[in-house]
Image (cartoon, rainbow, N blue to C red; front, side):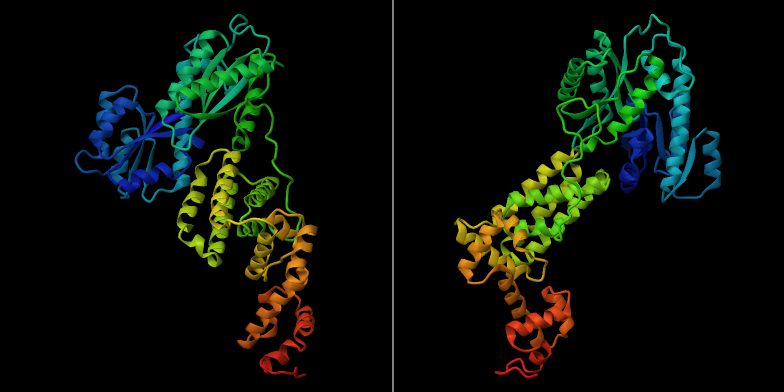
Length: 510
């Protein structure tokens, strides 16, 4: 991972550059920013960045003067990308004479920036390879050579005379941004535990801390010990982490296989739980897609409307299972939960005034879900939000009468939806057969009859307003107009058209 210092006098540009792309994906990390050339000189001396992105026009000392000073005073020099809002050829020509690696015009084109980063990374990698070839005992560089597959440094039989070799990759995790100094501290602590004790060799590669593990083939105890040492090092730095291992190989020349496997595993780090070193693909949680007629987000809405946190949690798990089964990635899963949860809260607040003053708070909690780095943490946070909503909605009394009242309220609020007794029973946490009998003994009607009556009452209101028959059928939850006609005649005694013509008549007119 190579470090970047951004130098620009415009705050929006500085902060915008931090987030314009996923820097780590391209082998870089933004370690700091500077608002002028003088501050950049100080920070360059402290941080020794591999790459500086410099605005060419700044008050006081401009970007080109900054480049000259660094070239004159420091060896080795970092690589440079020049940034400017002006398509000025003379500036560009001067910059090229100062051996800059690229010239970017504002607004910055992401693809062009990424292209320059690849070029710079290749050059730095090559520079490092040339330097490292002269260090016979530089184990880290020798491992990187092996994993890259480019001109590996020969390894003598007396150097690594182990029975097996395995690559482990560690990804430190936090809800906050992790700076380069903290990553370096983790690496130093791991080196003390592995390099200095003969357990393995620590190295850095891409955005990970790697460990070449010694003789772990079919040794769960060594994997547990590895996890414990990593846990200790990351814990001292206040970090969580995920660690995977790519499987043992019999000789160092085959380490690329272990590394490729580890890379494949760690790309799925969002789905792993903590507490162990992972050797296999994460297990998909849940039972796949929801095959029932009612959607998972409708289940979530009904569960919350019924103030049943357990049913809400089940609906969330069902939602997530569907996305996992469809192969959704981390960002898609987070975005899906944020979108569904926000929409559900908004929908609830329309008919539940006791929630309205809390909507902004709930939405802030939902937006914060993007900061979660584990799927299991995401689900726990969602369940906690649902519990808070249910606490606001729950009545103090309990017992069967309460559940029937809740059913009646749910039917009246959501009669146009695809309601079924089984769905409401699940939302309320009751057996559907028992709840159906309880409902009939309390209301005198079975569930479907009561739902039909509520819908027909709403239909009569809409027909009195002059709505067309097909519009009314759709609005009250009947997708088939002929079926609506039959239901209306059954409960009202006339057709919808006749009722609309004579809504107050004592006798139906045909």
